[in-house]
Amino acid sequence: MWSRAPAPSAGPALQLLSSLPVSALRQKATASTLEDHDFDAAFFDEAFEAPGTPRPHYADVLSVLAGTDLALLADDVRRSVDSRGVRFRAGDQDEPFAVDPVPRIFDAAEWAALEAGLEQRVRALNAFVADVYGEARIVAAGRVPERLLDEAEHHEEEMAGVELDGRPHAGVVGLDVVRGADGALMVLEDNARTPSGMLYAEAALEAVDENLDGDVEGHHRPGAFRWTMLADVLRQAAPDGASDPSIALLSDGPENSAWWEHETIARRLGIPIVTLADLQVSDGRLHAWIDGRSRTLDVVYRRTDEDRLRDERGRPTAMAEALLEPITTGRLGCVNAFGSGVADDKLVHAYAEDIVRFYLDEEPLVPSVPTYDLGETETRADCLARLGELVVKPRVGHGGHGVVIGPHTGREELDRLRRAIEDAPERFVAQETVQLSRHPTVCDGELSPRHVDLRPFVLSDRERVSAVPGGLTRVAFTPGSLVVNSSQAGGGKATWVLE
Image: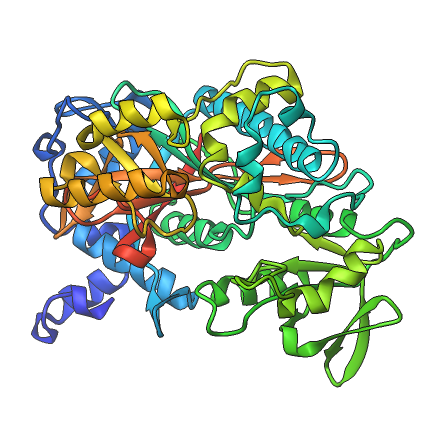
């Protein structure tokens, strides 16, 4: 705080400023002006409906920001994040998690509509995964091609016929939601294997609320992660008969990119963290070496990078050797279950709306970004003819790696991509390019528009499917960039849902 005050020679002035609240200290600097915000009608602006005109649910926040030294506010938020020890691992080193101080805000009506659509989608995806390892009715009905499953990297044959007795395959799902130029919200991707970001969403919310919320009139719903709900998901994943199940979080350890999140989740839930080296199977049960003694586990919350049962040569992985027997014999619950990655497959996303219709007999409440199966001859020909308009992604992978955005790509690279698609169309999917919405973001002490998306989380147990209010808004700090991932210079925003 002293660094914001006048030099020590100011004497009484220094004492006066040091007694003021943080918000008052920020107001001593030059105020920003909302009229300076770069409004571009080609993009949907989350906070402004016209130049200098805030959307009604943003008016209070933007009014406060207009009289605030944004550089100091950003510094305060950064310190709040740092004080929580928030880190993610990029490459071989830990990086601070960058949080922008300007929250993203959903009004109650829009969030309610999105919430209903996300919960509907997750119910359908869990029904799809259960069907894939059961009768595969959707294939028999001709609603998805058989090759969709045959070629799916995360289709685990060992899970065929394994009964979960009413437990969902994917208890924790993170979806990537974007808003296009017309203002409509759409699902860009589904993440049903080991989605991360829940704690980063909470950290962003707490840091911004700590520094801004008290200055803003009105109330937003607690968007912090609902620990009781996650605890219920894990407890109810236990095999029948385990009334007080023993639960552990399975991690790769400090080398995992989300190790900070793993540690924090385990601490909040009061469960131990284990690695594969701590596990052994005896008499069909999974045991873990914890605090100097062996404990029998009923549930594993799996947060490892390795999530396959067979390696590229078809041999059992260390994960399979540790977990498969107790899972298939019904003595261990696993969140998320092995094989849930078929719902994560980017090609499955092309059929997600039909999956909702098939299993729920309902129209999708939230649409998918139009996604194209390049294994279909006519579809492939159409996509190749307009390759420069589309986004092409590897069918597997994450973090935005390998994605080619046609409108931002030169002819030579597009020609290489065209040849790769022609040689192995099953390795790629194509999507319509979405002009991601923009949100005012503090850059060099000023409000500047940056592209954003949303990672909301949906939790499922035997009884409920529930979307956590808010989620992690991800922001691309690089001007014009559509890549919001933290591993590629992105960051986060607090997400408020108004009551």
